[in-house]
View 1 (cartoon, helix red, strand yellow):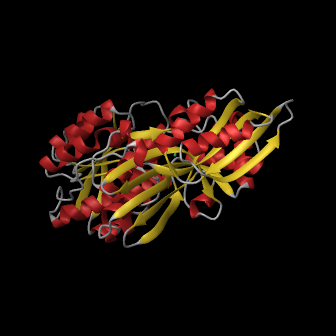
View 2 (cartoon, rainbow, N blue to C red; view 1 turned 45 degrees about the horizontal axis):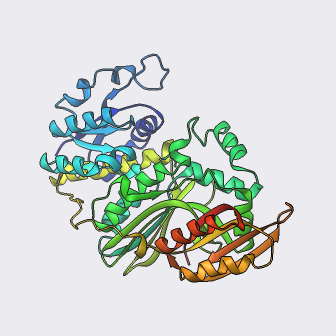
View 3 (cartoon, rainbow, N blue to C red; view 1 turned 135 degrees about the vertical axis):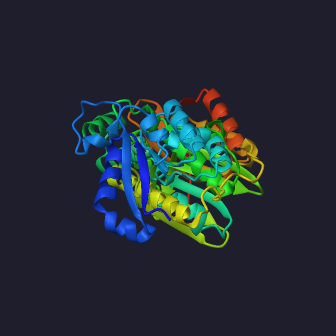
Length: 428
Ligand code: HSE
């Protein structure tokens, strides 16, 4: 058994700095849990001029100092990006080094390929920090819930959008002003598109869905809508009707077929996910045996994310001592079957402006009836524009194909002035 497990770090940004500090400050606990010491031997950096609280002898700009050093057992990739990190991870695995990554973009795009290559080389590839920062959700799916059959995962897996929506809900502010404030406070990036358009959440849902349903999914399998079009009026009407709007990822399996989506959705106020606020994340799981369970915590940040990375380090080091690395197979083993629009069911929230004239409503209800969609809740109010009224409807459960047809037919009606908003209703 090795007395000291040697680690190479690729990247020393926010998360890398956190990993360095946890390994240094928690050395005693880590030794007890692993049965040996842990030492960071080299750290690959890009910018030499940056001031760092790290022993400068550990730093290098040459990736070979990490990847080709036979003394290094485990490589931790915390540099982000896709192509370069993928190249480094493949090289580390080729050199029979175990790999830990926090890179959700990479794992969502190339997870299956990297897993296969890790197995081929007898190496571990762990990525707990890639989803839900400090929430041990991957380990919970792989180990904690290994005995169950998971039918559905609903996740608030993007902190930036949850922060923005929480502020919009609590302060009644509009999207653009809250986004600016979030950028000022450092909760949103200067280019926030990956977060606010739903792509970041979609990548995380690909990872969770693969682990939950044991099938292989691509990003293109995910239906994605972001939060940029949400208006304070939508949030107000949702509140009047007893709901909170959240950006949720939904992955659901029925009779062997799966749907994955990321979109703003109305959650009943009493649903546990409705009170997950600010930058926090949560994943709500429905299993055959467990029933319903929720995992909650910080979705990002230096130490939460670094905690997950170092927990992977403990797992890999323990596997090294037991001689069982590379046997931890989580490769998908079912053929992928995706649902069609006709078999994706939910309720919907719909807000539109209609000409306030006799017979208008009968034309609207006729279209709902024609498409077999029943109304559950209805509000009609004047909106202060001469001759127009605002209509808000929550439907009963229907399939997405009928709903999409209804929307297009409503848009074609002369008496419908403008379709303002349409969201899924979830969690009932
Ligand atoms: N941009 C991500 C978020 C960070 O807002 O949740 C963690 O992946």
